[in-house]
Image (cartoon, rainbow, N blue to C red):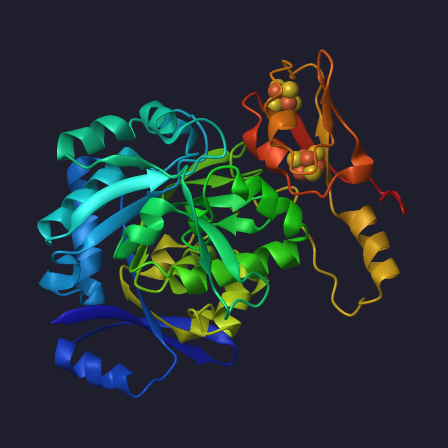
Length: 407
Ligand code: SF4
Ligand code: SF4
């Protein structure tokens, strides 16, 4: 028997009805639907090894993954290793989730590796800081560096037709995107799809921020990247998520669920909707959906597992510096004025700045200079928020300038 939550709409109100049918019937029920993606939503109370592994196995079963899904395949786990940070800050993927997915994948016959290209520090240092090194070592899973780039062409890309991918990404058979649910000051939300940005090798990421220097272009590039390297499986850890000014300076919040899907866009759309973010407003999901790389519309998701209604999180704080999209104002001058008025700028908090120069080293257009403290030349700032994302001392806040002309 297979239990799932069926979603109905009546006069604009959504209802979820628990149903229980034979798996064969379910296959028949969805086989006629062309655009539908299945997402397993699992309630998880804590990061105990057993609870997390149980949730991963349950999720894979609900998705109907066959025993041989990973058999003899090279499988690359792509966790979120943004920057060195203790696990309780919820910046990086949780070691229990990494361990559970790595162990399950290996038990299903996969040959597993893990790797990432952190924004700050080496992958080894970041994995050490969040406790993932030990877990991977215990399982005999090698951790690999993403420093060596391989240029890969993608002629179908809408905006980006060539990516400097990390060698292990190019050489693997399958990728598993292991994301932590977090808010993001540039893209509003980061999960399974945005997590793939770390597959771009080392410092090429900064060059990409400079090249795709608006949220629209950056999001379209992310959608293209997904088209090139779609993960075989996506796991979004929403057990403890990050709310507020993510992806690094936000606050951890217990949200108590995990979503798993073969469709990264659908996994993100489900995770977004559970914390009250409209997936339609997350541009990289919307663009990826439009390009056919996944399903971002919530009414086209087949949610299986635990009740989304029970797991729904209220008052989840959004990123403070969220970029805005103003529809209907296509004139470049008007768009520029609106951007200057409403899109926040980074601002150094002098009493917190310790002059470490991490922000200056990572600023794509190089508009941060250092004396004793950091100073931002706002005229050249592209508002990518890399500085705020990577500042180890939370010494950069975002604020609105309310100036008509600045660029
Ligand atoms: S703003 Fe942050 S990253 Fe930049 S110099 Fe100051 S402490 Fe370092
Ligand atoms: S100052 Fe910060 S937000 Fe502005 S371009 Fe540099 S890194 Fe990006």
